[in-house]
Image (cartoon, rainbow, N blue to C red; front, top):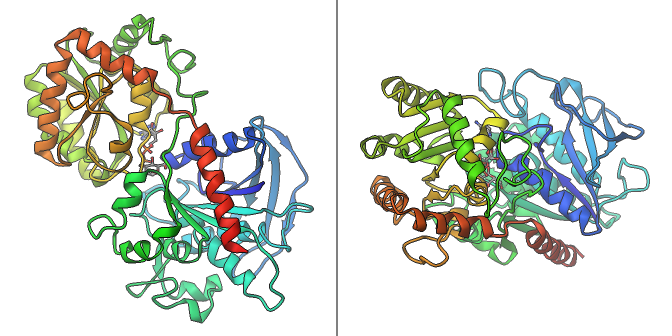
Length: 486
Ligand code: ADP
Ligand code: GLC
């Protein structure tokens, strides 16, 4: 199958969260399973890409978009990267979505409109890449979500050219890609698709809604989240249309790239370890304590958070649980960046309790690995979580996670109290302060019983979170989308 995977971020080139990890691992697994995978990604500033660079293709200026270039790079993992080079749109200081001050770029509609438009073109007979047209265009999140609409537009042309099938994956429904409706002119969205049955969302244009409306198949990153987003509580106003398209909606759990997240081989760790040789884990704990400026106390349970600091992740609940953690003599290490109020509250807590709390603000891949390896337990009390990757990494690293009973967290962690034989962590009874407090008490009790704790660690480390099964589930969805598009 010829698969075009379109994404605004892909590790290790550019990553702000889990989508970066998924974009690295899933296409590689699809290629590994014998498919021809091309990955379309904007060429952002400072991105270092290795591989065999092919001849660039010129994309002429079109409508509001300046001329651009498509540069194919054969990556060592068997995927062909298609870098979308358009310096006026992508060569910026700041991240993929926001400038250095954290504000959305004012021209995001154009920036991601181009990404989606080129993705769609690669699935038509007018594909800009000589000799290559996708069978399926797999768009990820709102930045690519106009691609299914553009494909539907191409399909509706008088000549009725066949086009690729379209699949949209929702990594986070909360980001709806909202723009003033004026953007519809710029983006070339036909008038008859600007209403409530098209891209309109409470008077604005929602790129995500366009994708939900027009994709031949929709997926999201866990079965539980696929159910939750069809309810008013988690549907952010899109639940009605998700219910209407429920027959096209599939929940497929993310996996782990075991080439990157494996404590036995992880080059970012000072000490490697495995299920049968856990000494390295204690050494990593010491290394983490030293690096964080905490006393190298072996008996103090070390809890950790690695996260975007937002409401979604329940960071305020962690702050609320500090009295319980501190009273138990625990240590807490936090790595993250995000909302200023949460950053400040965490920094204040670390200043007040320098022997127990250490906070690093920023994005640091190496430290994220050391934390997964060095911590005793991982906190993830998210209010909602489409999948979540850190609870998977935690289990693989022998760091039992304490998680909220939502989305992919519920689908990937087995509660130690409910199922002592297979438990891998602690699932809160409710996604709130009381739920976290109660789960923490259970975790602290288990920590004081080393054999019980060891069982939890071993159970988690024995789990298989590889990508192969999920990649096969995506292939089945691609097949269905292709039949639906005929
Ligand atoms: P989300 O995509 O919602 O942020 P996930 O759990 O799916 O949540 O994925 C987050 C990914 O980003 C993980 O690989 C995690 O290690 C990484 N990450 C998040 N914040 C940081 C940070 N401050 N520094 C390094 N890595 C981070
Ligand atoms: C989103 C979600 C996260 C998920 C990731 C990758 O960022 O918030 O739960 O793991 O996408 O699919």
